[in-house]
Length: 252
Ligand code: FPP
Image 1: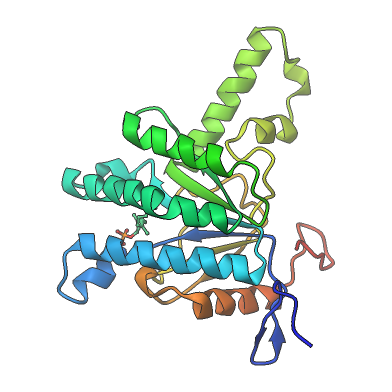
Image 2: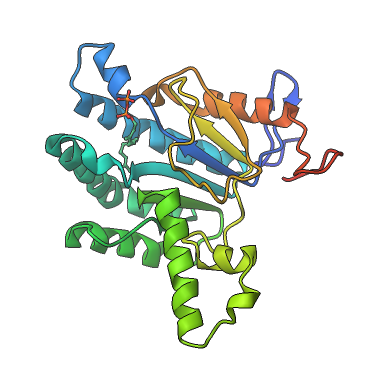
């Protein structure tokens, strides 16, 4: 008898996976500094960890994996580092897109497309279009992403619809905003993982993570692997989710 591929066993604990896991991939720079290496090398190893994370998420039956790959605030880093990160994204899409597609991964990009170079934009569009019908796992790439900016864009869109007479302002509710977010149609994250030991949300999925469980792992992102993901899920499964009520409810 074998286990269904959505369930694995870690020390006797059944790993029924959450539906949506979101990850703040933090600590690339510190990983590199600790080894006397340039920060660029930390980001390069971060991409390897990302590959492991996508594979492990698929194997564990996680349906949606969101990664925070470049924040709206990351533009304030030195130009050389911004260029390195852009280069890594381009290489990741060019090198890995075919494999992601073969493995049934659908790519979706969230964040502000304005201000991105044409070659980056073209690659992001290509990744979304090629994989649009895939069903196994959705990889949501948060790129040039900020939660406050996303909510502001959604509010602006609702205001424009109201001015155009397509929306009654009195009818605006949480559902209206949700439908205008970049993540429209995606489930909210059940589990948000942040590596590196920092315990902050850093403008990531501010709206969507309203009832997410947070697990902070004391490892730098380049050391992330399947065992780390399993450990986070085990911790998540220990939590009691009440969604503002008094009794435990199953999210997923
Ligand atoms: C945080 O480490 C990581 C980032 C700012 C970006 C995450 C990027 C990758 C994993 C590689 C690029 C992948 C793609 C797809 C673009 P940090 O630099 O903030 O580390 P520190 O806090 O230790 O300095």
